[in-house]
Image 1 (tube, rainbow, N blue to C red):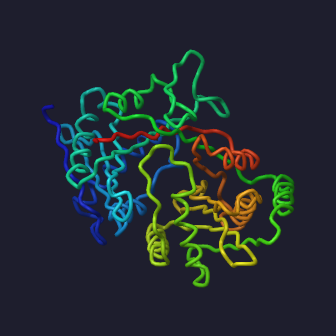
Image 2 (cartoon, helix red, strand yellow):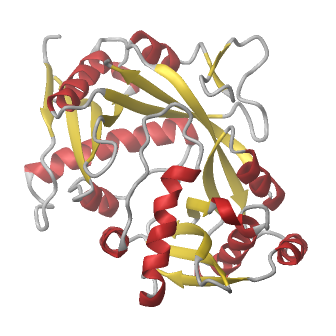
Image 3 (spheres, rainbow, N blue to C red):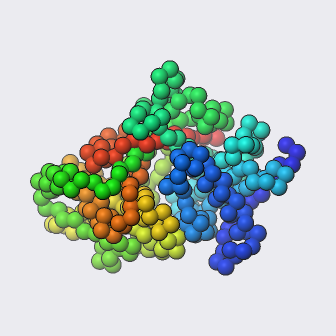
Amino acid sequence: MSGLSITAVARPQPGDEGTARAADLRACRALRDGLHMAKWGNLDRASTLREDQEYWRGTEYEERLQFLATLDGVPAGTASVLLPLQENTAAAWIDVLVAAPYRRQGIGRRLLEVAEDAARSRGRRVFEGYCEEPVAGQGKAWLQAGQEELPAKSGSGGVPLNLASTRFALASGYELEQVERSSRLLLPVEPDVLDSLEADAVAHAGGYRVLGWRGRCPEALVDAYAALRGRMTADVPTAGLESEEEEWDAARVRAEEQGWERSGVEALVAAVQHSGTGDLAAFTVLSCRPERPQVLIQEDTLVAGPHRGRRLGMLAKIANIRRAGDECPAAESVITWNASENRHMLAINISLGFKPSGFEGEWQKRLE
C-alpha cells in the first residue's frame, strides 16, 4: 500500500521521555487507548504510560516487541509480539490493532505478517493471540438472538462468527482454542454478603490460616510463594494452547515485584497457609494503579490441587476484597478473567457478585 510504513518501536530507556523513541511508544499507546474507549467507554483495562515504559523494556523471562504502522505519516495501527524466554520457547503471543478509520485496507494483514515474521525468525512455531469484546449489555449473553457461534476447541464457550476479530483470525489461519469470560465486581461488597460467605469458607478450612502483604512478599514466605506461582501454569485450564509449567524461584518473584514497583503498580496479595506444613496452599492478587484508582485488576488466583475442596479460593478472595476497601478506598470495581471451563472459580466470583462484562477469544496457529 502506497504511503504505508511499518517500523519496529525501540525499547524504552530511562530518561528518553522526550525523544523520538518515546513518541513512537506514545503513538502505540494512543492507538490502544482509542480502542479501549471505543469498545468500553473507559480506560479501566488500559495500561498507563508508566506501565508501558517498564513493560516494553522486556525482562529476562520475556522479550517484547512492538511495531507501529503509519499511513502517510499518521499512526494507523500497531502490533506486538511477546516471546517467552524460559518456558514455552516455541510459542509467541501476537496482537494486532488497527484504528477504525484505517480498517479494511490491508493494514492489519500487513502488521500480522510483520509480527509473524519476527516470531518465526526467533524460532517460534506456535502463534497465539486473543481479542476481548464487550457483552451486548450488562448481565446479558454476548451471543445475541440469530447470531451464529464459533465454538472453542476446548468445548466450552464460543464467539460470534460475525465479529470482525473472528473473521480476521479465521482468515489468517488461527483456530479458536479457548474462551475466557471477563467480569466486573462493583465495590463495596455488602458486608453481610462477605460475612456469610466467609463463615461458610472458614467452616471448611480447618487447619489453614490467611496471610497477606502489599508489594514485597515477606522473606520467610518467598520460596513457598514461588513454588505456588509455578503451579499456576500447571493447574489452571489452558485448553489446547501451548503451555509449559513455569519454573519460579525467589529471584523470579523479586523480579516481578520490582517491575511492578517501577510501573507504579501496587499489588495486594492474600495467601492461605497450611498450618501443619507451612506450605502455601492458595493465593490471589489484586493490582491497583494510582493513575486508575477507580478500578482494581484481579491478577492470578490459584488453589493448589492437593488443597482444593476446602473453600480456600473464597477465603483468599474475601480477605483481599476486605483489604482493598481499606487500602484502595477510591476503587469502585474489580475486573477479572476466567476460562469458560473453570467452573469452580467462576462459581466463586458469581457468589461474590461479579457480573459478566466481556468475553475473550484465545486463538492459536501452529506451523507444523
